[in-house]
Amino acid sequence: MLKILKRKAKDLIESQNMLSGVFTASLLESTIVPIPLEVLLIPLLQKRRDKLWQVALIATLGCVVGALLGYAFGYYIFELLRDWVVTHWVTEQKLDTAMLRIRTEGFWFVMTLGIAPIPFQIAMLAAGATHFSLPLFLLATGLSRAIRYFGIALVVYIAGNKAEELIKKYQFATLGLITLVLIVAWYLSMNGR
Image 1 (cartoon, rainbow, N blue to C red):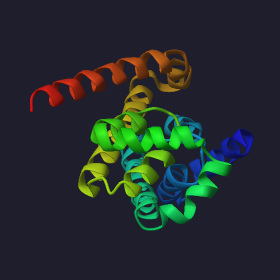
Image 2: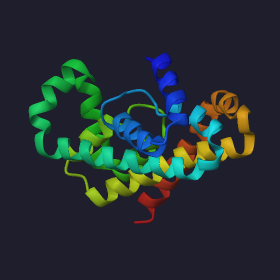
Image 3: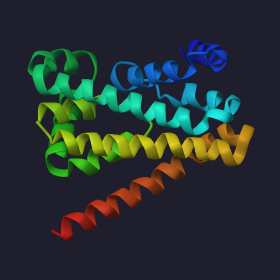
């Protein structure tokens, strides 16, 4: 699957429909394709540095639209999907944990999942199923994915062709630092009430 995505990335780089392709790939990644968009995004950004910020913006917008669709599925038909989700996708315990965390941590839980390179679908479904605030959900999704995609664009802007190597090398340290910052911000916001 990764080889297919890398081949598609090469085709997309030269395409006149590059930005619409990025939008579609981002929408699909946030809804049904559990492979991080970075597989496509990093090589694309390295080859098309003239469109760095546009690509990051379009990827963010595609993810937000996909997140809105996932939220709608959770909001309107989650009970119909629940058994299928538990059977084919995630354990009942993980699903229940995600729904509990949406109820208790909401915005910060969505922010954390939106930045981490893990499938975002469970956050969308859980947010919709628990009727979490749609504006807060969209804000957390937009901010977290903007941090992620514009951060990648910034690394490519600064490091050029070495960006992919740097991102792979420091991915977990960076995620750990961002997660720590989010936890501290969440803690401060909860204690400031």
